[in-house]
Image (cartoon, rainbow, N blue to C red):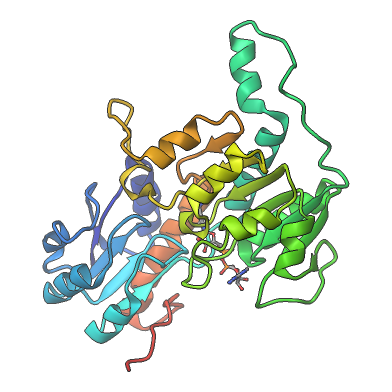
Length: 332
Ligand code: NAI
């Protein structure tokens, strides 16, 4: 099939070209994001391939449908950026990559915990300037501490196992699970907030999870908690976290995602002025580390994303094999 692939970076093309040796689709790469302005570029393409910061709202989907698009192949697990009701009414199938490497994201979340706790980002800069003083670099043993995992799907489960390996007591909250595991026990939302020394978010962005970390949730947390979000930015009410950081209630914050990341992440803006004041404020804290949505960014994950994306397109075309279709809501 002819595929138009939006928002592609050089590092994604090689894995897609390599995987396509087995599928033989016609790949057309675009660096542009998919927006209402660029949707017309997909005229005549039955398959459009999109990433996390592409726009797939009703207007864009309507334009794509008018141009003949029948399949949206997401190169991501998350699909919160797709208007699924609009896709359903336009007869567009939406496919995704449900799990490409839970280890990639879970290990990145652990990297943020370790770096924040032992102040690796500050130590790195100090040593390079010949400053070997230890003041301000004090951390704590993770061994024996309580780690709260919010969402124990593919990624949260791996994160829980790694933290259990450090000798942590792992507690978890997930409305879909409550059977204890050898490395984690399930608790209520309030218990997780009140007992955890480290909290890591691994649930999807849904209407009911938007701003689940708000000022009320922050007030319930242990003073000095390490808060990690590698899932979706809007799980966290960022201005509320800024206030909690200023008040010293949140000990450290590690983010790989940000609610307003669409105009920032994946681009080199080093010659531009960042106009998002909340984001800029976050960058001023010594106890905040932000990475630009790189949790998925391992060789293994890129290869798996490419393979599953092309398998989805092949399954859609031939009706054979597994199509990881995003369930669309029923028509009213
Ligand atoms: P998954 O679908 O395997 O697991 C999500 C879990 O969250 C499920 O067990 C679900 O029951 C649970 N959940 C749903 N609502 C909840 C709530 N209100 N409270 C607590 N748990 C809840 O998803 P997976 O693969 O583990 O991915 C998790 C998230 O990680 C994705 O939704 C995506 O947003 C994010 N992600 C981030 C990446 C990055 O590069 N930073 C890459 C891939 C995914």
